[in-house]
Length: 442
Image 1: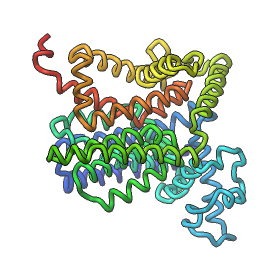
Image 2: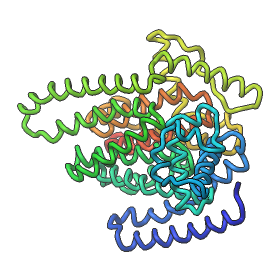
Image 3: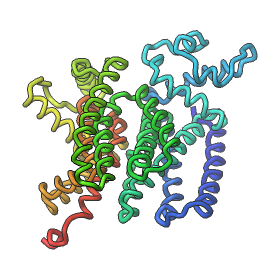
Image 4: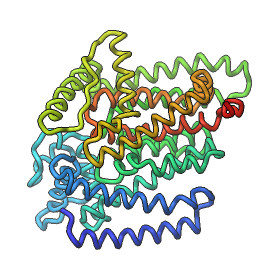
C-alpha cells in the first residue's frame, strides 16, 4: 500500500505545509500563544498522520476500516477516470447508495453501503485529487483539515478563558490519542473536526453574537455529517448544547425581572426541542433506541470477549447488564470509568494501547489531585456556575457513558472517546486554576 513514491510525495507535501504554516504564522496570526504552538502542532499532526498510516499498514493490515474506505474510493476513482463514463465529481459526491452499488469492483458487504461509511468514502475520493492519488498524502490531507478545525476549537476555548491560553493549547493540540486518531482516513477524523466546528459556531452565535450566517451554515453542515457518520455523538452532544445555549441566553439578560420572565419560557422551549430532536433521531436512526442499544452492546460484549479468548484481543467486561435503576447507575459509573481512566497500565497488550494507558493514568492522577485539593463541593459549585463547564460535564458524562458502555474493546474505545477528551481536560484545567489559594497551601 505504501510505496517509495508515496514517501517522496509525503515529504514534498510536508515541506509545502510547513512553509505555508510558517508564512501564515508570521503574517496573519496575532495570538502570541498560537504563534508559539502553531508550527509544533502542525509538525506533530504530520507525524501522527505518518504514524497512523504506518501502523494501519503494517501493524493492523487486516483489522482496520481505513483500507476499506481507501479501496472503495479507489474503485470510484478508477471508474471516474475511465474513458467510457460521462459523470462529474459532483455526480459522485451526491450519488445515492443504489447508484454506487452498480459501479464495478464495489464492495458488497452491508456496512460498506451504510450512508455514514459512504460519506467517508466520498471524502476520500474527493481529497485524493488533492493528495495526488496517494494513500499516504490523502491521509495527510485528512489530518490537515482536522488540524485547521482543531485550531478553531483552541480559539473558541481561548475566547472564553483567555487567561488559560497556554494550557488550553496543550490540552487541545498535544493529547496523543486525540491527535493520532484524528489524523487519517477515518470516521473519527471527520466527526472530531465537526465537533470543533460546532463549538466554534455555537459560541460565536450565543456567546460573542457574531458571524451569524457563516456559523449557521457550519452548524448545519457539521450536524448533517455527524448525524449520518456517528449519530450517537449527537445523542450525547444535544442535551449539553441545548443547556449551554439556555445558560448563555440568560447570561446576556441583565435585568433580573426580565430574566425571571424569560426563564420558564426558554426552559419549556428547550425541553420541547430536546424531545423533538430525540424523536427525530429515533425515527431516522432507529438503531439508537434504548432497547436496540442494549441488545447491540450485549452482542458486542460477547463478540469481543470471544476475540479476547481466541486472539488475545484488548477487550474489557463491564459485567451483566441489569435494566434496573441500581443496575443502570452501576453500569453508568463503570462505563464512565473505563472511558476516561482505562486501560490501566497492567492491562496493556500492545504498543498502541500503551499510549492510551499512560494518557488515562495521567488523567486519573489529575482528577484525584484536583478533587483532593479543591474538594468535591467546590468543584461542583464551579462547574454549575460556569455555563461552558456545565456543558462540558454533561457532554462528557452522557457521551463517556455511551461509548464506554458500547465499545467493549480498548482499541475501539480509544478512537470513539476522542470527541469528549478535550472537554474533560478543560474541566480539570479550569477547576485547577480556580482552586482558592487557601486550599493550595494545605
